[in-house]
Amino acid sequence: MSYPEAIQFLYGLRLFGAKFGLENTFQLAALAGHPQEKLRFIHVAGTNGKGSTCAMLESIYRAAGLRVGLFTSPHLVSFRERIQINRHWIGQDDVVRLVEEMKPLFMHFPDGHHPTFFEAVTVMALKFFAEQKCDLVIWETGLGGRLDATNIVTPLATVITNIQLDHQQWLGDTLGKIAAEKAGIIKPGVPVLTATDEPEALTVIEQTAREKKAPLTQVRSSEFGVRNLELRLPGEHQKLNAALALAVVEVLQNQIPVTGEKIRVGLQTVDWPGRLQLITRDSGQRVLLDGAHNPAGAKTLSHALRKDFSSQRMTLVLGVLQDKDWQQICETLVPLAARIFTVPVSSGRSANPEELAEVCRKTNPSAGVIACHSLGQALDQAARGEFVVITGSLYLVGEALEKLGRVPAGSEERGLNEWTGAPSVPLPG
Image 1 (cartoon, rainbow, N blue to C red):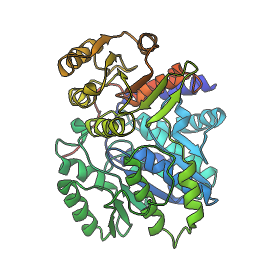
Image 2: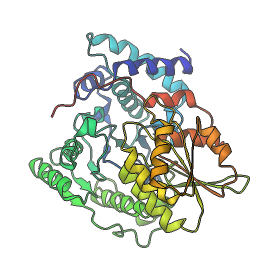
Image 3: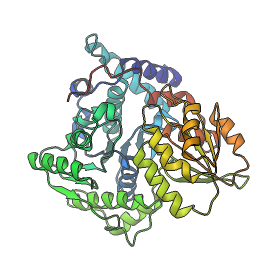
């Protein structure tokens, strides 16, 4: 099997949709030798900020000399981004080998219960991290938490960044319902830390923590612990993510000691592409990339634009998935732009650029709005703009990084972020 063939096999697993439940993943992990039992984890859930918080934790513990696994999703360009050790992507040869080793295990599942793409990749990651003898794994949930495939582990600490409205079709239509799904990763006696400040969500998290006798720490202030620390990731919201990461490190000091100096190094060197990432092109044009894909993310981006780029005449390139609240995203970002180019996202779930453009025109009648058939066309049209913001989807940000020559091309792998059709097992209420 070649690497392209392995990727094609993983594409095939998308036909099994998205299942919510742990039975398949537990069984698959058992067939693979229970790799999760050989590892230590920090398990991270939340609506926004999961990736940045994971990246900070990984960077701090790597600076402290640990061999750190990092499991995140979705990937921006390459599938290999999802499974990293000390920020090195898993190698193509290892992807091929792990796919070949997983294939026979699927024969143990009856028709109608075949492991999904995410279930298979979760166990592949566990197997790889165990083989590579990682000292610690920073372990990000996929969707929700309670019934997410990542929830077969018992971590050293549980982290819930925040609770906002997103994925309502899967997780519920209130903050309380979404919080219940995220709080499902809380384990008996395991410390849980959160930066959640929404009362409805916090009540659910507090209740779950009490029931599980899990010590709860609420990080209340974005300034807590980070006043004198230099953060490499831009944006005021990253102070709160950093405070949360610092609180986790503090809670785990007895198990994994980290000095203040190593914490500083970790926060100063952390890298997490596609989140308020500023690129200066050869022409001098500045391009800001941000994967704001829900209303809360759009508000965070809007705050950053008003604070740090208010003097700039902004050109907005916007592409959003149809199943997101794209009208509210438009209402938040469109008033800030002088010119707007709407584009499709490379996904079967993409919102129509013409429909996006119509909402943009109503929201900001004074802006010039053009619906484009591709991101490439939008970049050509925006070539004379001094400051361009590309946002609305992490998928779009990944495509932009390729178009701007910042990462090797790998567009044939971005489709692995998709699943086909509706979940094959509905989310229990």
